[in-house]
Length: 131
Image (cartoon, one colour):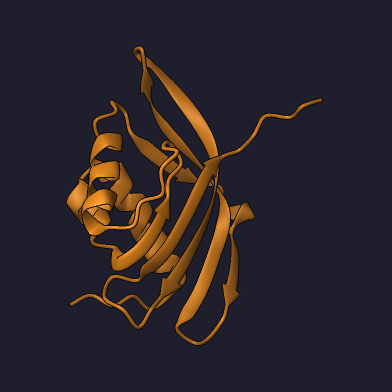
């Protein structure tokens, strides 16, 4: 069993697993009752199979990667084991053989007392300025 020491450890493991492209490895970070509001789907995901399917579909993208914008990372500690992390990351993958970047906002709710610590994950693309 793997338990993480910090919420940041969970986030860094999530980034590593996204970049590896293995949907099962990514899904193992999400609690059985986790809620995922994903970046590239209009549908909320509420089951382990749904989490795995979403990341499996994302992993089919050539050149898939994610990069954290570390200066934007914010942590709120609710208890010793329960934390929220929010910030900005950029997903990268090829579209029509061109590598594109999709800056995105995220919030994670993480419970370090759990082997599968992600309880809630909301991510959305950063909107373009209207001006």
